[in-house]
Image (cartoon, rainbow, N blue to C red; front, side, top):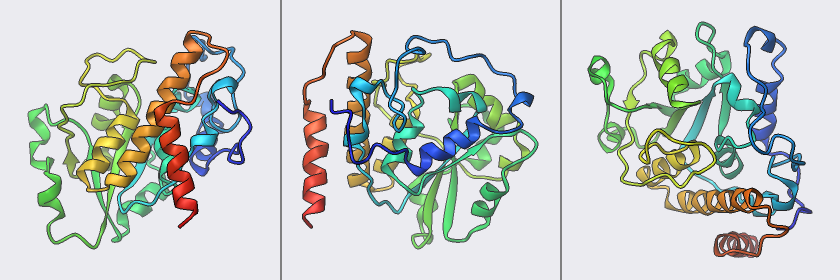
Length: 260
């Protein structure tokens, strides 16, 4: 992959993630140092991929009526393998906020109060005590077509996400949208409890499909493939990575978009 790219500056989303990571109150949130495999690799300052497999050339921003608001556990901001970044790279209106149990971000509350958006909290419908909040997207959108669907993602491990859901009284009034997908995860950088447990980017892809945003889902899907291919090459210490079909698709898409 080419490491030199005109896009090799951090996306707005990535800059916000770094703001979360550099929270001046982070001492109040004890965390383990990132010592996973690859922690000593030299990484691109923009996309956080190993430099030999930089993603920047393939970052392809697109428009979407649907938006994503990411509530990020503080530990996730330090992980270069976090895939919420891929959503933020692809959909520039994506917002990220550091989750806090008792002090919700005011900017997030302001978005919830904005009538332009119709928010949905993405979470499984596998427990009986909040079934009255569970909605179906097509039904919930009836009569609300003028508003933009806003998908709220709880970004952390499954255990962390459940705690975020259960421990946040300021989320209690939001409709819960479960994602029922037959897709199996292709994410191999962290071990999932089940093949049905999709990573954050994969959840984003499926939600975009559900919302009828086929183009955005396709672009994000190919970008996620390139991300996976880069990490697979890094894991096997390949000196270079040939242009793959997913990379070529994104390059062709960029070229076609630029010529319009």
